[in-house]
Image (cartoon, rainbow, N blue to C red; front, side, top):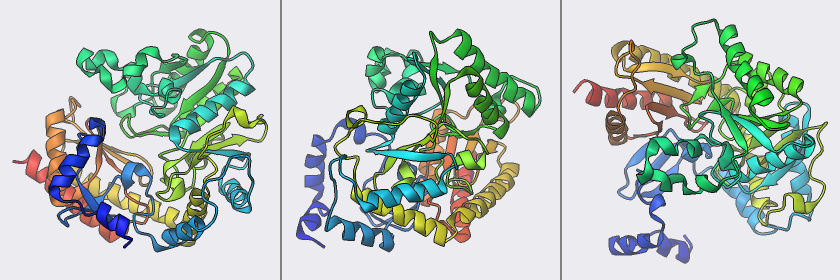
Length: 447
């Protein structure tokens, strides 16, 4: 190992305590644990203990950790062009654009790259504003999460919940008070908790009409875009029906607004590269990030061929957006996914996990709902299935800590357990993880 890295990775306990003071508290007190390394789908802490990672680390490391092929292309590219100004063109940049166009929905064939998810949402907003004359505002869904950069935070549900958290917690999104408030949030379909008792068709129509009514009556002037996650993640791992998403497409066409799919967390989580393909819906814009680079920051937007794109660098220029290390990693990641049939693996292993959860549900009725496509699974926990009262935050934290003790790491969205492992996970590894999850349920729910 390089001597600089060796020193940096081997601090004494005293150094660790001292150096940690220089990092803002937000990144030191959010329930993580000290890591030393990772390989495959496993994280390793500083004591050498391993944990199955069912978060893919913010859902970005879809090939797991320590992939030798990804490491090799990163090393090769780092010996030459790394970051260059956005005005420069290269064959590598063109090659990635061509490959993404091949795997994307047919009519979304132009793209630009950004440094992360939040900037990608803001790029999509710019394109929408450019293509809908006179527009200033957007519509998003309650529970939607689209980033915390200044523009993207307008569409994110967290900034509208300050009244729930109380004055003591407003520092979570203190800047919400000065956002431009150019995004109107509308109720989402939530089948498990919907007060609507009609059929799936009627429910889709009911909630889609809320979007239509908001565009007609709740937005001053034309609406630039409707921003939707096909599967909400931070909002509770809620999957929207194909019917609902298709109705949104029809409404956007009728209203002259654009449909924007936020696919940061659905990329490669179904049996297709993009959830738009899985749900058979053609949005006007797709934002992508997280898994694209196989763990290396890579993000951007895809736009429909009929839209005007960026025509001047100053419209959407970022110093680090022309990142050739990210391009190399993204190209290799796509190659591995296709070669190793990993989207088929997503479907197979995802179905096996949900089958196992349904068996567990018979013993643990606290498992109120199991939902989500492929490897984008949500497990909603309740006190009892009749009332559907959410399991308390204290109990959810007990379950989380019990899972950590077993060697399983996942993320929570309030009373929902999110299971989103790297897509290279095997059936054997998935079964082991479900053994760990069941052991944690037994330890907490049957103590």
